[in-house]
Structure formats: structure tokens, C-alpha cells
Image (cartoon, rainbow, N blue to C red; front, top):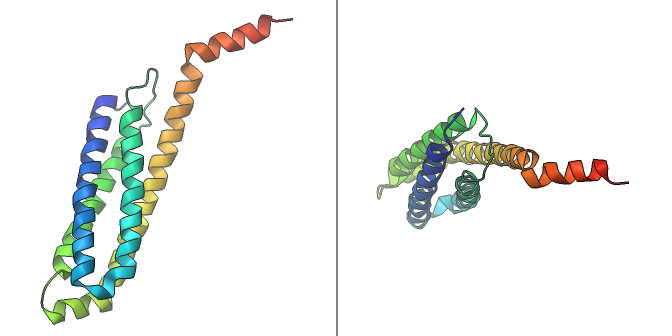
Length: 154
């Protein structure tokens, strides 16, 4: 089972990375005007993913939290996608017209793939958060004492 403190640290680190990548996306939108629609969608996914990561980090200190085994893999894959997105932005963020034309021809599809990957990671994190919330609720002493009190009442 994964260590809750390392998961919290990784999630917090990824949230910080997302802030940096979001700034890069905004800069890219200003430089490559043809990319505004796609980059706006990427910005929304990044914000949503950052919120999920911050929630995940905050939930790690709950007593009785059961960390899903797949969570480390989800965070690792998320980190990889963020790195690939950064590389993609650097590749297409050039003053040269040739590079901008390449973005219009092939970069849009690539960025759409990254946006979809970010959305998938956000969905996976949401599921993991739900599983952890249920584990905390099921192991809560208040919940178990309420169940036993209800069984003994007339």
C-alpha cells in the first residue's frame, strides 16, 4: 500500500507543476493565436486536475484513509503527460512561421490528445478520492457507534 505522506507530497508537487504549465499554455496562446480554442480547453482541464490533486493531498491526513494501489501509477502517468505537454508547447512555441504552420497541421491533434489524457487522469483521481472517502466513512468510529446504537434501540 502506498504511503499517504508521499502521495500527498507528489500530489502537491504536481499541483505546483500545473501552475507552471498553465502559465506556459497562456503564453503559448498569446504567441500562437491559432491555438486559442485548444489551449483554452487545456487550461480548463489543468485547473480541474489541479483542484483534484489539491483535494487528494488534503485527504491524505484523514484517519483511516485507505490509499488505492493504483494511485501511485495515476500520479506517475499524470506527471509524464504534464512533461510531454510542456515539451510539445516548447516545440511549437517559436517565432518562426514554419513552426506555427506545423502546429496548425499536426499540433492541434497532439494537444487534443494531451487534453483527453488530462481529463482521463482527473477522472481517475476523482474515483480514487471517492474510494478513499468511502474507506474513511466506513472506518469512522462515529459511524460504527451509530450503527451499533441503531441496532440496540427499540
